[in-house]
Every structure is written in C-alpha cells, then in structure tokens.
Image 1 (cartoon, helix red, strand yellow):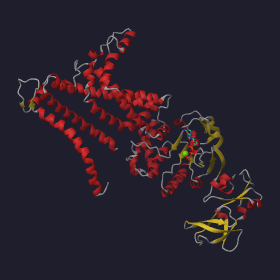
Image 2 (cartoon, chains in turn red, purple; image 1 turned 180 degrees about the horizontal axis):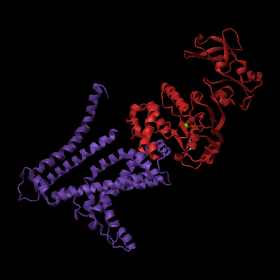
Image 3 (cartoon, chains in turn green, brown; image 1 turned 135 degrees about the horizontal axis):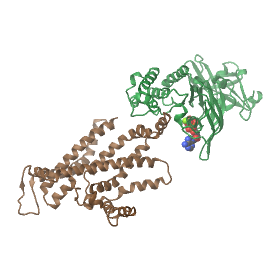
Amino acid sequence: MGRIVLDKVTKRFGSVEVIPPLDLTIEDGEFTVFVGPSGCGKSTLLRLIAGLEDLSSGHIEIDGADVSTVPPAKRGLAMVFQSYALYPHMSVRKNIAFPLRMAKLDQAEIDRRVSNAAQVLNLNDYLDRRPGQLSGGQRQRVAIGRAIVREPSAFLFDEPLSNLDAALRVGMRLEISELHKRLQTTMIYVTHDQVEAMTMADKIVVLRAGNIEQVGSPLELYNRPRNRFVAGFIGSPRMNFLEGAVAAKHGAHAIGFRPEHLGISLTEGEWRGKVGVAEHLGSDTFLHVHPENGGETITVRVDGEFSARHGDIVYLTPVAEKIHRFAADGLRIQ
Amino acid sequence: MATQHSRSAARLMMAPAVILLLGWMLVPLVMTLWFSFRRFLPNRPDIVPGWVGFDNYVRFVTSSAFWPSVQTTLIIVGGALLITIILGVLLALLLDQPMWGQGVVRILVIAPFFVMPTVSALVWKNIFMDPVNGLFAHLWRAFGAEPIVWLSDAPIFSIVLIVSWQWLPFATLILLTAIQSLDSEQLEASEMDGAPPLSRFFYIILPHLSRAITIVILIQTIFLLSVFAEIFVTTGGAFGTRTLTYLIFQRVLESQNVGLGSAGGVYAIILANIIAIFLMRIVGKNLDA
Ligand SMILES: Nc1ncnc2c1ncn2[C@@H]1O[C@H](COP(=O)(O)OP(=O)(O)OP(=O)(O)O)[C@@H](O)[C@H]1O
Ligand SMILES: [Mg+2]
C-alpha cells in the first residue's frame, strides 16, 4: 500500500515561499515523476513527503493516516539520494542491511532479505566491497538495494541518475522501470530530464516555481498540454511557437507545433525558409530552419535519409490537427 | 612533474630546505649521542671528562626514578589524549549545531591554544587550584567540603587537566572540520533508515571521524611526550609527576650530569619512536581506507 495525499501543503524558507499551497494525490502503485526546471521545488516537495523538511502548513497523508508530524523513519518510505549517500566505511552488505539492523530484525531474516536484494540488483559479486570500490552504476544499485530491503510503502528518488553517464543512465532507467513493474510499489521520482519523465512515468507532475502546472499521463501531457509552459517543457526537441499574424489566423495569441508534426518539402509549402544547423542523429535529423519572413527559428524533425544542407531552401507545412493554440495568458484554447 | 628534467630541477630546488632541516635534526642528535657515551659534568672540575662506554645508559635505567618516570609519561599522555578526544568530539558536535553567536563561541573555544604553556600552568595553579584562594577551593567550600590540595593530593590528574585544557582546542578544531565535511545526505539517509540519534553517532559520525581522531592522536602524542613547562611551573617534578623529559632535565641541569642526561635523551628518542611506529601502523591502516 502506498497512497499519498498532499493537502494544501506549503513550505517557506524564512520569508521565501518555495511551495505555495499544493494539492496532489498519488495513487497506490503509481510511478509518479516530478519534473520542472532547476530550482522549482521538486527536491523540496520530495523531502517534505519524506519528512526531512517540516511542513509550513497543510497535511500529508499516507494510506489514510496523517503523517504531517511523523518522523521520517516512521513514515514507511525509502529514499534514494542523488549522491547515493552510501555509508563509506561499511561494506555493501552492511549498507544494505543497515535499515534492517536499525529495525532490529533477526539475523536470519536480514540475511535472507539482503541476499534477495542482491539477487534482484545483480550485486552478488560486490557484497563485500566498500562503496568506494564500486562504479557509479553499482553504487546506484546499492542505494536502491538499501531502499528495497525495507519493503517500504513507497520509494522516493531524487534525481538518482544525474551522476551517471548517458549510456548507463538509459540502462538504469530501464532497471528502475522493471523494478517498479515487479514490485508494484508506489514510486515518486524527481528529475529535470523530460525524457526520463516521459519514458518512466505513469503520471507526470510538471512543476514551476512550486506550482503544479499540469498532472497527467505522459501522452496526455504530450498531446494536450494545458499551457505554453508544459507544451514547451514536454517533448524533445522543444515545441515551436509562433505569435502574431500567423497565430491570429488560427484565432489564437500563439500557436505551437512540435518538430515531428511539420511536413517538409523542397518545392512548396506554407512557410519558406533556409536551413541553418542540421543535427544528424542517424535515425532522424533535426533541421533548424530560419523562416524567410524573419520569424523565430523553427525546428523540424525529418527522416535520417532526408538530405538537406546548410543554406538549402525548404518549405514547411504544419499538420493542421496537431496545432496547439494558446491564449495570451498562456492557457490552451480548446 | 613527470619528466626527468623537471624532476631533477625539483630536487635541486628542494635541496636547501632538506639540507637545512637535516642539519637541524642531525647536529643535536649527534651531539646527544656523543655526550651520552662520555663522562661530562661541567661544574665538577674534579671529575675528569672521558669515554665511559655504556655506563651512562646502564645508570640511567637502573636509577630508581626511571621506570616510574616512564609510567608517569604514559599516564599523562594517555590521560590527556582520552580527555581531549572525548570532549573534543562532544564539543565539535555542539559547535556544529547552528546557534546564536557561533563565531564568538568558536573563537572562545580555540583561545586556550594561544596561551603559552607556562602561563596557562600558572593560571591554573594560582587561580583555579590554589588550596586557599583558588576558584575550586571556593567552590568546594561553597558546598561545605574541604578544599582539595590539587597539586599534592592529585598531582598527575591536575597536570593532565592543565594539559588537556591546552590541547582541547586543537582536537576540537580538527574534529569540527571533519564533522563539517560529513555529507548531510548520509545523515538524512540514516535517519530515513530508522537510526535514532545515538546510532547515527556511532554508525555514521564516529566512523567518519576515525581518520581525524587518529591524526589528533598522532600529533598530540608527539607534543605531549615532551610536556615540560606545565610540570616545571606546578609541581616541579615532585609528588610523582616526574616524566621522562623532566627526569632528563633534572639530570642535566640539576645534577649537572650532561652525559647521564644525554643517555636519557636517547632513551626518550627510542620511546618516541616505538610509539610513533605503533601509531603509524594504526594511522596507516586508517588513512588507507
Ligand atoms: N534550506 C533552504 N533554505 C532556503 N532556501 C532553500 C532551501 N532549500 C531550497 N531552497 C530554495 O527552494 C527552491 C527550490 O529548491 P529545490 O532544491 O527544491 O529545487 P529543485 O527543483 O530540486 O532544483 P534542482 O533541479 O536544481 O535540484 C530554490 O529556489 C532554493 O533556493
Ligand atoms: Mg533538486
């Protein structure tokens, strides 16, 4: 079980209000991702749930019980820190066993759970090493191991992959997703990487300056962003925005269209532009096109086979039903 | 500093310092060794200087004062280490807490380190431990107790107290910087893992401090072995407070027997080295990890 409810939660550091009143429900077994730009309060929110920070006001409920003033250890949550926070003087085995020893479980049970965790996380060969003798990915797994042995009602992850290199990050991402599928335990995962958010989440919570901008499944956020901020934040490369006359034609203050929702042609189309930088990823190519009317650069995603070079003239046409319209206050026009 | 050329240049640059330090160390060492094998009492013209072989060494160890002085030395060093490290850890924990007037408190804690040993011994002897006018005497009388004559009733303890007071700032300072270097996420992780404060101290903070503690032990031992002013000023070596250093001083300056004192000096060097090797083993193990 692990249903977490935040009820008008706020957090102030001195006079600075980092989290304005915020309501959020995280269902049992859900993989929820908090995303947002740096400094928007993701870590703070996670630490509030963990109990490492005191609430300024509001309530937090876990499985129906108010835990607002319950100390971290008693909330039944486990946290994986960005720096892993392993205990450097203890072996991997002792690190993983630490929460169990603190819970005064008997040795047989501790051994059983530790070897289980080591099995699941492929740590059997490293149990007697110190954290200092492990690679980043292995340390990450130890940190996760220390979390799973407690059999918590929910896992909290604070940017657990940000210290890993790109290849490892993709691997660990899969491992964490698989772990979630297997354990079916609530997980809250903080990241500022929207790719991680899109690929892992059941539910994404987009935050800006402590406010929830939108909550929804990855595809909901991708297809129907509630406002310009979410539209620009979710999806890679970023959505293109146009304002002024072009937007007015669609009856909006601004229109947005994703790079993958643009048709490209060498002969005809709605906008004529010159190719600037072309980023070749192999499967796809991202072209940065400078429109001839002098508007903002438009990014377009084309097939990897499409050959266009710097300075070529191309014509772009947005897919009509994929155009997002936004009002002057940034909100989506239905 | 990898090429042949830069390495030899570096050696050349370091040479003056190395030669100076070596001379600084070697000259007194060789002189001590030289005197230790000679009969040499400069104030006694009737005794002719000359070589005596190992006579001085034998006489120094067989003197009834030798073993008690080694014992006293070890008690004072051990006692001061124990007090400074236990109190040092506690003080460092306290000073690490955010509190009002932190800067001032820290300076106050460090202050005793800047007081010369002679002065601090005098302060303790006259202001605190004086059996008639000392603060302790007043305190004892305030509770209706008979004042303790500190320097004759508990002389070794008194000296340990004075020395600890002087070295506590050093230990606290080193341990405080060590505590501050502890990753706060580790503490938070252990908090989430359900460790109560006492367990957090023993499982997380203390192991983190072990390296700093060994360094404090090593450095303090080196300096505490040669404690002198505190004894000279307070008891003058009476009441069983004669350490090895003090015994050597007495042999050389009070009995004017330079040869015998030098032999004692060589013993002191040997003792210091035994302890140093012993400590380096432990420290080496701790510093590797
Ligand atoms: N202990 C603190 N005292 C004062 N302000 C704080 C404290 N901790 C965080 N803040 C402020 O709260 C805001 C949110 O911080 P938080 O660490 O939650 O951001 P974040 O979303 O996790 O950012 P990042 O992606 O960079 O980790 C920031 O503006 C930060 O300056
Ligand atoms: Mg953060």
